[in-house]
Amino acid sequence: MRTILHSDMNNCYASIELLHRPELRGRPLAVGGDPEARHGIVLAKDLIAKKAGVKTGMALWQAREVCPDVVFVPPRMDLYLRFSRRIRDIYAEYTDKQEAFGIDESWLDVTESVTSSKDGYLIAEEIRRRAKEELGVTVSVGVSWNKIFAKFGSDYKKPDAVTVIDKDNYKDIVWTSPVGDILYVGRSNARRLNDIGIMTIGQLASADRNYLKESMGKMGLILSAFARGEDQTPVSAEGYSAPIKSIGNSTTTPRDLKTNEDVKIVTYLLAESVSARLRENNFKCRVVEISVRDNNLYTFTRQMRTESPTNITSEIASYAMKLFTGSYDWSKPIRSVGVRGVDLVDASIPIQLNMFLNQEERDKQHKIDLAIDNLRGRFGFYSVQRGMMYLDRSLSKLNAREDHVTHPRGYFANGNQSGVG
Image 1 (cartoon, rainbow, N blue to C red):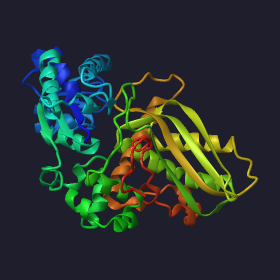
Image 2 (spheres, rainbow, N blue to C red):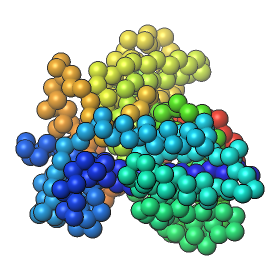
Image 3 (tube, helix red, strand yellow):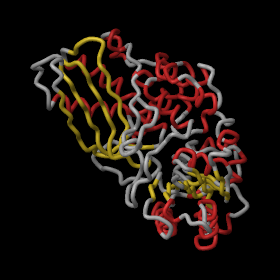
Image 4 (cartoon, helix red, strand yellow):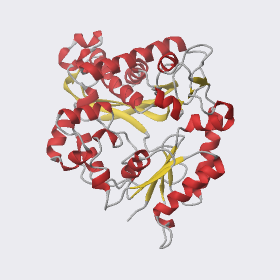
């Protein structure tokens, strides 16, 4: 049986800042934005700010409202990356199979390091102790036989803790927890599962898989396998940046597409889905990809690098349409279209601004997307529709966000999708 660890640096950015700003200890601290310019969002917070109600993703003014004494500091990504590299150097002493999940989290396959005198728990304890002694930060480590339960374990007890999820206790610990506590069950999926009576991970594990597939498509089968501990995806060798390489959606349209306007409607629907998932998982993409299949089943795929990393709906749709109009001659009607965001980066990492892009307008578009996400989360997908969707109601009935789920490519790329079909 494999031994998989998931190590998570606790309150990473804020903890590292407090190491370099000891005078701020004991005060609520948040990292993010530009406090002088009074704009930006909270990227991280310490435990004091968290207890006061400060949340990651809040606007700075909102954080100030819930915690008037909060101290804001600007992010220093070079410093955080230095600590990330140093803790991965520690991990490397136990295994070369480590897979990053952002700057502050990694999966480790320590199966070959386990001996009769040193099991996964003791290895995790060593890593926890060394992080504190050598780097001055704390980590929470989950230990299990698969990546999903190891991640659950690192989230289960924080800060500075080791949690073992094994074959003897997973039903008592994992299965009794809310369904939203398992990886890749975001707010939307949790709500959909709750709507069909699934409140706990155990209920998800025992639910009829045909019913889950009917209710949620392939994602229902994937989450069912996760809940039962059947994830067998490997931990990538050192050097892989993230388990998710891309996020995309594709659909077979209710009728053949015959004009650029038809394609534009479907492309925007798919781009809305892709961008919403990117935002939900805190990613931006640096490449946009389209796939097109005509009614003779001929398929082609094209990619384009974006001018700046993006999770903005209008930008992803614009790139997709540019790829389409530059590649297709309309020799045949179109049966299927796909849009995908590729080459993902952490959305919270600062990027070099592009002088040829209107960043103020991009920020406005991003805020509009967030507002739409919020409205659809509260009142349903069809509560907000673009004007172009009224040009063809048969095409615009597609709810790409929920009805045509394509799991993020990469997570299952090399693994055994046990129970998933």
